[in-house]
Image (tube, rainbow over all chains, first blue to last red; front, side):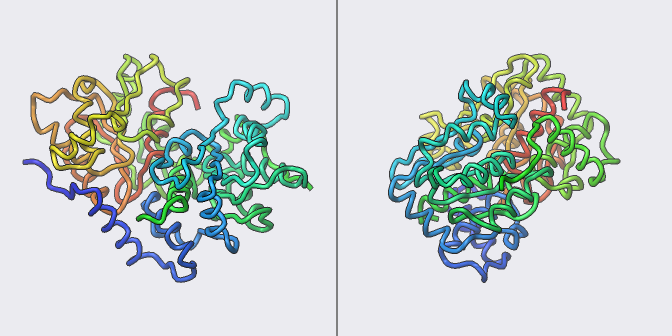
Length: 209
Length: 209
């Protein structure tokens, strides 16, 4: 006997978001932040994510304005860049991931860092006014913070800093949110990852739920 | 002052996996399963994932053998297909995602289902002996189960069934593991997603940690 289940994509979205809003404690978020957190929770399948999401003031508004103005989106991993829903982008924004650039392995060896961190050196021409989406590598977020300590380094408009994992993830995100060089959002602790990061970008890109 | 952090990728992996094995309760898994669960936990940033992972008997061995024999990997979403580390594949296995095929929207309308489910109709020529990796859509997993109720439908070698979310995810995975048509692994409940699914594929593809 065939399994019966909800087959209408729009209905599934509506019911999912309603479930999240019923179960998650979202009271501390601004309306601009709330829609972002709802989508992050949706991607994670965890209402328990809510208390770990921290925005610096004005981040959601700054990121949305940047995207509407055509900002490129700089991604640390291909799972992030490939997950972004192109139809939601307000200005045919460029989605850039430099990790597979053939120069990256040599660059990583040269600077003594991971390929994920070295790939950010190739972001420099695109960095001014960009929206950064780091969903994989703590070393990428740490390297970005160190790049931005140089005041001559171009400033992105906003940073989604959600690397995941057991070594450096929590520390890199705390370093970002303790002194955000530009408006930022993080997920505290070990949680994070490409799906949550993509969800934040997709929410900031369009008001459509 | 620049942030100090571990910059050696191999060291980060070793320390991450050691942390997971120290903290997670993995005693109920076979050695073949354990390396898969460790990578799934690594991708999720959650040792709390362990109790929710359920293998049907022989799944890890069947999936590994299929991949070594050259099985294609059928993915429900591009974040899954793009996340799989090609260098880990033992037989230059084909990685297939049919979701962006131009015929899918019309097919979805015709069968009255989501695009994610309709895309699986295009898997049929590749399905015999394949490794299935569903990391996004509950409707895809439900549709696969219904396809496999037809005994003339070709059988995959193994199913990684890890759709995520609030509507149908838990139910589709329980349906799979209650009566697995072929050896399968799930994450119980709402948790799942592309990163966890990719991690399972990457672990089954190579014994290298």
